[in-house]
Image 1 (spheres, rainbow, N blue to C red):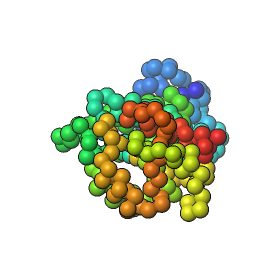
Image 2 (image 1 turned 90 degrees about the horizontal axis):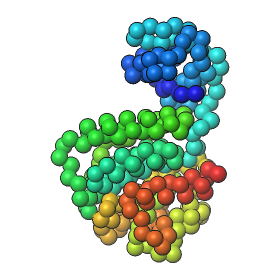
Image 3 (image 1 turned 90 degrees about the vertical axis):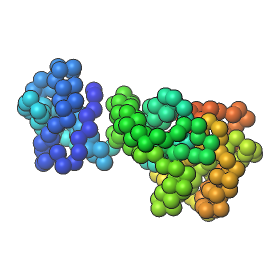
Length: 254
């Protein structure tokens, strides 16, 4: 059964108002739903609702709440992916697949070796990427839509990380040897990583990180910044984030 996402302000008592033009069209024209049919609703924050269609109008659908329960299909571990911006459509693939793997948020980052220039129109691409995230969530039946944020440069990323209360910052780096992401997830003297942790995952662009970027991260965040290897095989930037995220979810969620 398809799930629709409704802001909490449109959930009033035992009634939910589906007002998105695209969602109303999809429910009525594509799915050919009728009064009395069942619909699953997420409030995009913490609760899911089992409903049935009470009224169908041209601009909205009114749903009656039958029961509700907290999210069941969201990982407790929150991972923000800071992705070095790659060429072409690779970022679309990154967003789609990391959403399927459980990412909490994706932030494109322009780094020293990023080969793509930000010409001031990247916001249009972010809207496209957010739509891809929305569609991926519906396909994999997650309870919440991850955010695709506006792009940052490396300094902006550093500033944001300072403001966030991350439990750990994981940085896969092709020059690192002997210290795996599995090791980092189990280092426990200073940082307790467990199911429900809030983690920053930083992936370099096609050209990789500058050594100075790695040094800046380690100098700024000390032991929270864990530089790791993903193994003996060097992965492409669009693969590295997916692989690292899968490893994190395996270790902390399963």
